[in-house]
Image 1: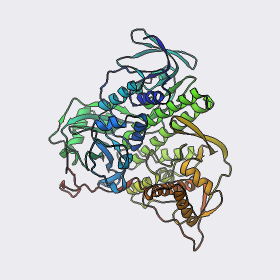
Image 2: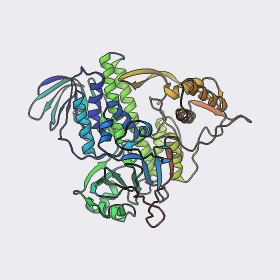
Image 3: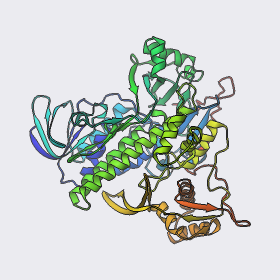
Image 4: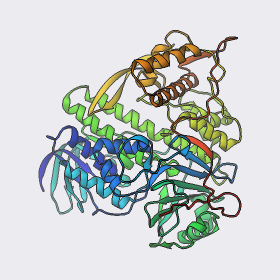
Length: 584
């Protein structure tokens, strides 16, 4: 097997497959090798996805293969969390309306906004096989035993049996093993005070908590006094059920993991009924669930991708989104280096800044969720420290609200929080606290961009295998990218504009671009998200003028809705129904 390659990837999971597939797609002349320690298929947690994953699967050319596997279509999540014992739904589609179209379907229409709940053994094999089909050299059951390096440069990989692999670039996608990361002694940062453990198993013939259309369902996230339970249908016969508890609780109990797990499931009014006719497959599995991020993700000729780069608590199902999106950025950075388009140091720094930011952002937001759960330690002081990192001096209570209700901006111009829409997130936080969500722009009539004290910078946009550099502004740790809707809005607000003028300008922009009504509604919702974030972060000044049209209150993003659970086809005895209509 001794050979020279352009790129050597350690790990054939979703991150490794994504890097390899995109490199092969956009530059087939590259020699790419993927080295996987195990033989697929093999089980792995991280089964519930977000819609971002599907966009990347489509770019990889593998979405149709994943759809053909018949995995349940995830249209959102059902939660029992916060100060209430009621169930409520977090929808990907407007009002949760899912058309029962036949399967397999196409990546179009409503499917652009949905995700999958996947059996990772099958899913990961589909992706790795696809990487081989598009041109990657794939070796399974092939462990890397030694990393050869000189300073910060990787010189080669020694495989089990003594074979040596050399490459011009190396990507560590080996998950928690972190083979390159550990060898190069890359430090880890643990930005969360949470230390949990996960206990889980797979069940045969569990009922689905909800069945919508043809194959549609929601992931169940159900808080208990001791922690929370995930319930993820992976197909017609197999379900992943896990329990997350604080490590301190686990230690104090002095019980076996399987006993804690069994007691939690049997005591839950919903889960106990869904598994009454089900059979667990094997003994339970456990792992520590500690969020972390590597302090650097790149070096002279290497990159970290996937869980090797960082891990965020699974409460919001963003693990796979982080893995795929980070791997995509790695592939684009290598492609740009090969093309000589930009300085290699800038490309590496963009990936490091962006992806570390995404991981930390999600860790922070996950921490916020846990503050609404009495079984976990008080994280309000931690929230104050987070706010202080971005230059905001707040009390712990103020910071706790800011973290949940404030906006974030990343280099793509998105204002989402942990891949969730920011306006919907505010409504979500309102359901936690029982208080009305606060919007900075509500009731304001005039807006103007404020770049005082900001320095010019650049950000990268990724599309069609190429990186395009766009103007941005930086003020401390905060970056404002002039990209997409955010860029259009910032340019328009260079002079003060009234809310009425902004609405008219958005309609003219839609007309000039021949947008459909649905496209315009999405564009306008993005404008509102961006405007709220600009004002929240001090990038825009808002004021109120008498007798002028004021910005109204916005309920939530068009793409995601939050409402009380409506799966009441069959009551479970206390009015909080569990729907099994149309179950396979």
